[in-house]
Length: 266
Image (cartoon, rainbow, N blue to C red):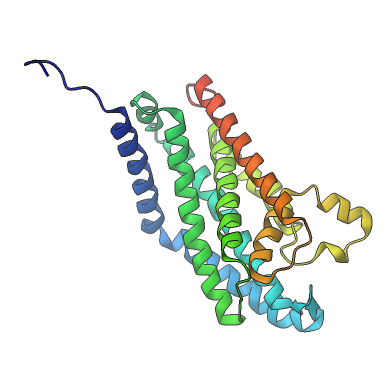
């Protein structure tokens, strides 16, 4: 290199540092407010197991060839993963918008896909931590088995990614805190409760079964349950295909929206 010449810029290193910084910040945020991020899912899961698993479960009997509490456990874990992944992405990114420091990332030499990956990784990380906590609670109440470990982790990773992307999309468009809560309250919660967390769709009349199959959360929950118990109300490989398509579509949509500056430069 000639004397006085500037050293070439290593964009790969800059991008890696940017991605790592976002993930470390997200991890620090999750741990710093652990009373809001990790404790409530554990308490909620415990209440579900006591009320639905122990008390109501005795009257329900078996579900899908298993005790109701055992059948319920994977659904409760996945429900916690879904809500936690979504909540982390939407609250963190909207907080960046509200605090006016999202502009620092937008003017930094970071492509939009790095920013998206950073926040998605934060959502997946929180989903993993909450999933581990709820799984620990489940092991207190039932002898949870593992049928296929790879399917468990693949279903978790794809589901957490999809809902982290969904939360990020909500945060991009949200203009106030009320709009941050609309989707979880009026869309996410109903879809989750009707997504096979608490029951098998085989119990429903035929018209309700067909309607349920249009619910993407049903496919996610059943793929995850198959990893533990080996039973599913849906085709597991179709469920994985739908999750992969949803993740790719949401990721592409976010990149397009961020490139246009929608919700970010207003």
